[in-house]
Length: 387
Image (cartoon, rainbow, N blue to C red; front, side):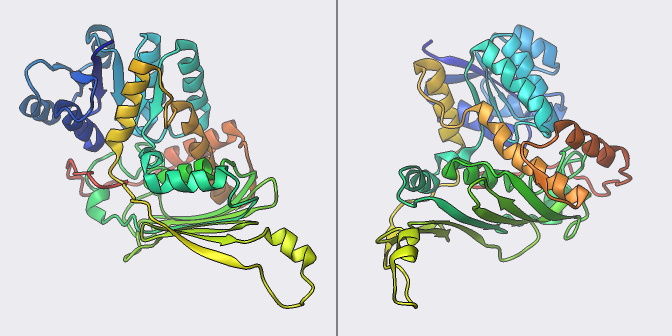
């Protein structure tokens, strides 16, 4: 396959960006040949921003049956990701979905099973996995240089969103349309990076979230979650879209030192010996292990959606490894589902969560909602440079 024929379904904020990248030649080995959208204004935008060779479909069925695409990039609202992916796999089409993998893990696992059966390349847009900063952290942890995990803290409040962001579309920031707020949208990138860099999933979670604390929305915009791991390590995630100026500080402590990332700078406080060894052998009463402060020069890059798409295309053409396999999308999603469930039940929950219980509680949120959006603007936002 010399050129992969790619279709994009959903021409909102992210879908529009993907169309631009594909039509500008930014993605090597791929060509945009079809799009699918029922929105007349977005169809007009596609016509004005692509060449005449791109087929335009208003109906999903015709798109999958008649477009002739080899691969599809799914950039529709969250709930539809698993179902659209399953339809693509059934047609023998490679799939790259926008995050999140879905809203609840039950149907995401069904999507993963369909992907495995199809044998097609399945990726997810966890674009922070292409960030050299987090790749370096993963290397430090996975190589054993940090030692055994002891504590994780991540403050994620540099993802501020004004009310106009939430008013930009009818589905955004609603239980029925988006399925969640800061956890499912903005901070899901960091939740993925947290489990991807450490290699661990938490075993228990206790959390507190506030819905509409800083915005006129019905979903959460402020969360604090406490994580416990099998080996006794603990973690805290703080996420909010209502604080300015915000903070983005990721701190990981192991028995051989501490990694701190803040202001896109990476510092490794590397112990000269294991803290556990020092603790058991030192006889001086007061004292602590010696360490070296190592400032690691690595350039952070948040605007790397193209890197994930390119990696996916290369995997299709060359059978090279995927940096962000779609099947792994369920991991961050299950952590976020557990945080929601703990907050809703006001109790500690274990992982893996009770999928049926989560779905039941989510449906209660949807069915009991009386929230009405007042000032929807139907605006397409420029997402370049965002997470």
